[in-house]
Image (tube, rainbow, N blue to C red; front, side, top):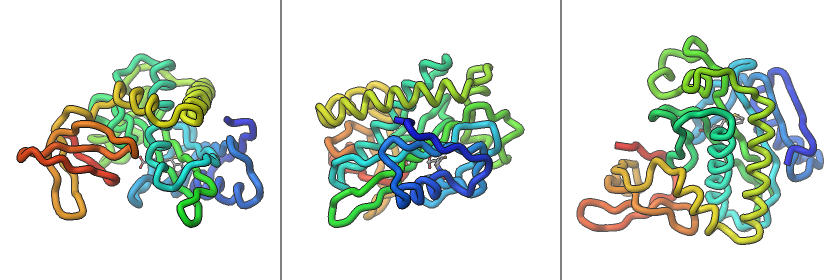
Length: 245
Ligand code: BTN
């Protein structure tokens, strides 16, 4: 991973650049990095705050040989790699909120956005977009983000080397991606469960047929979250956001 690195100053989104590099023949492992993004994007159409020089805004090109419906597994794999690499770099109490938000003290410090292209259930490629709020200070956040977002520097009290963190992430990701290709999702699921701040906690989410409330019980083979409701029913949540209660 990261054999080819494309570094930019300010871009609209590293995701957009990575998609066009694939169109131009980029291989698996190609990494796009930017100092700043003017239109950084997050999950569910949200914006991603990406000020210059303060964070890691990157997109990784992947060409996994898996069907489209296994994509959520890849998201969970990326979350584990990210969590483990951050743990190596600084001493923070970090955990994964399903499916792939990294939280410290309940605030988001990093997010993952997977975008794919494929036809008829076959994935052509995936762009794994990763945002890490590494060295942002309180004053770097817009007011509305302060209650929900934080950075590694704020939480650890130390400046983070972005280069070292990127290297650590690429190594972790490569190892887990290899493990996944050899042994499938089972070992990744165990690692994810150990880092989760979601399992065994009460959660609430909007399902297709209304609000779902209950205890987050387990992760299934597809990466979906099984929630046990007060009346004992088990409901699977495949996508969207959950609220930890
Ligand atoms: C989320 O938590 O909603 C996902 C955030 C993903 C942000 C990263 S920053 C690098 C890459 N480029 C983007 O435009 N988004 C991702």
